[in-house]
Image (cartoon, rainbow, N blue to C red; front, side):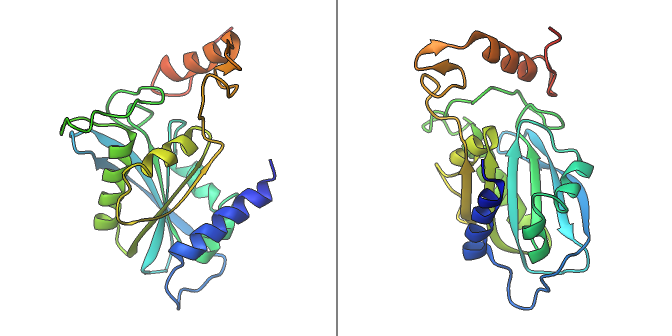
Length: 218
């Protein structure tokens, strides 16, 4: 994968739809992080790390990533000096979220949770969790400009796709990358229909044996 091209694509998309208002100083800056528990419509709360530039009041857009792989605050803060540095230098608020049932979030985790029954007003899925998260962010994060972008690679890319199924009005840009699609063909769990036992067992065991990522001790 051409990493430079991937991040350039994210930057171009976000720049088009999410660009901070004129006057924001676009220079390398320090960031600070905080942790919040965002309530979903069924009462479950999802652990979310907010990372924002110091000394910049905004209004700034928010870039959201939802993941099953964990978002400890120090690691996310470090990303503003790593892969996300071009965006960080432009002045964005970042939000990194543990999805339902993973790491610091409440609820029950289901791998690639199926879409809910839309006729059931109490049903939830990754689409409703993304919607509720964005709604909370724009209403509660100080100094945001009411615009949110979402992005992710692999499983977080799949979560990005689901945020687009019923998008929140504040969602202005999305970059789903390498999202799982056809599990029968795509080499995640099958190769042209042939079940891939070893990698499937390894992944499912790592994801389902605890709330954290726990590789199986072969």
